[in-house]
Length: 423
Image 1 (cartoon, rainbow, N blue to C red):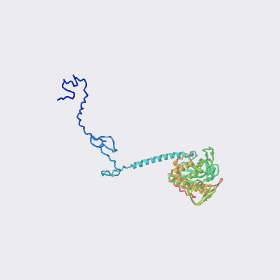
Image 2: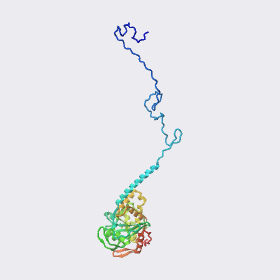
Image 3: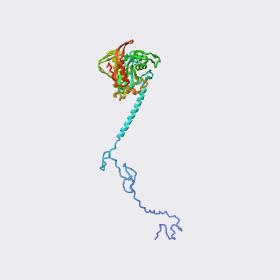
């Protein structure tokens, strides 16, 4: 039996065979050797990965995700239950997250306080810059010693500066030249309350010697009406005359003119006054019925200037002025004005534009003055003769004894007990 592959023989004499010594020179055809497959080694089982879609160890991983979220264990994670609901296993409800209201309220309060602080500081510097500090009281001569409390000299002048002809007609101011005072009030503010004392403009006083702070001229001593001191040398000589006749130191000076007074009243939206009887005065333009009514700026000025129908003349007018100023101050300091930014800024601006004050006046001093006027005890200067005959006509003569007693109480900041005859 021949075990050789086809074409091979051990018979050397067989010449038909291909090979050494073969008679046939043709090459034999190519033979294909069979491919022997080596035995396959056993494959270890494949671990199931996080992205396997199932099947056995040899399952094909396509890399495709069906949108489910898997974690390390390969198990699907369900979304957490809403706050306040019980979980699927029946456990306790999941607590709702607490809102930190304390922190929210704290930050809101801090932000509000910061805004108010910035607004307050900005308002202070704005208002302080608008204050007209023109009167230097340090220029006064032979001044009395300062007493207890604070004394303000409040002056209402008939200045027509800045008024047009139409405004003069509306306000019934006339065209008089020079400056005069329609109102002079001594306001004392102390620990025992506030006292508002009107100084009648026709009061007969001694105008002391004085060197004009602006003109430089020497003013001789003279007996005149109090109003003349302002006409001669303005606020400086008026303050000097009040100090010399009352022996009391003026700490602050405040002046307001016709136009400024009317503007302040209009900025407040008018001032409500209640009248016991009707008033008609063609000289001031006053025309009011009895009862309560709201006066605008023009009407308020007419009311404060009228005096001819008053039984006490100028003394009656000063009482009306005190009442009006107290009402105006009370309305300006009310919460409905202070807490309303659309009202408080116009009022504050009109007040600051209208006033002329001394160089040492601060906004705090001005606030104290308005606050004191709201509840001040109101009175006229004690008078012994309201029709005192002088070289300048009828004048008002003070009661010297009563005035001295009153000024002692003011100077020492005592409660005022002097009985004023006009009250």
